[in-house]
Length: 280
DNA sequence: GCCCAGGTATAAA
DNA sequence: TTTATACATGGG
Picture (cartoon, rainbow, N blue to C red):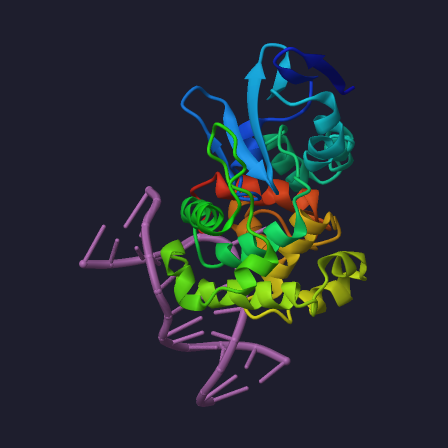
């Protein structure tokens, strides 16, 4: 049972089923960094946040209860019962094994625009460099938040749409720069309305996203799951099948089960943490 | 140095 | 419709 307390230091969430490293550094979001003192700091939209694990739970530093309820509560998906979800996987030995490997991982409900750009950048790339490119994107083109940490908001579609490709060179994003601009121009110009896409049937939504240059089947699934809260995304995709076959050679494809959404994130994280698996 | 990164667009078979 | 290749950068 989730317990939320306002304290002088911020909002304390006790027994939150939230492991900061598992959740913030598992390849689903790219704006949070672990600090030398063990806390985690990052920004979502234009909202900065520092999180710290304490003996009593996870402390959301300095924010008010109102800020927690109006934004971070949904962002961390706190109103979903992950314990129950994990239990529902118990019938599938393989899936349950993966889910139990990272019991403190939650699937974040990120902003659709940020997810779109982040996962365009993520293609054929590694997490460390993805984070670097996203960080430079925000520093060069986002508005400074004006806090003591020197944080920057994620740049708007309009700001990026008005840049030329050469102007994105400092990001060191390589050929993805053209993709970023194409996405920004279609969203800023109204050709693609991300709220509308989020409400479409999953098939229509996939098709709509893939109009964007640089968005293929994989990036589209990421945007749907992480940026639009569509848990039916990633119906045991081909990458996952290959990876699981290697990690669980005795399993038949049927025993992988019908994995999607949160389940696939558990599997992905499990595969990523096992060097013996070279499919991811 | 070398291989590779949760891919995609494009051309060619 | 399927398969091969280039693509910019830098992490390990």
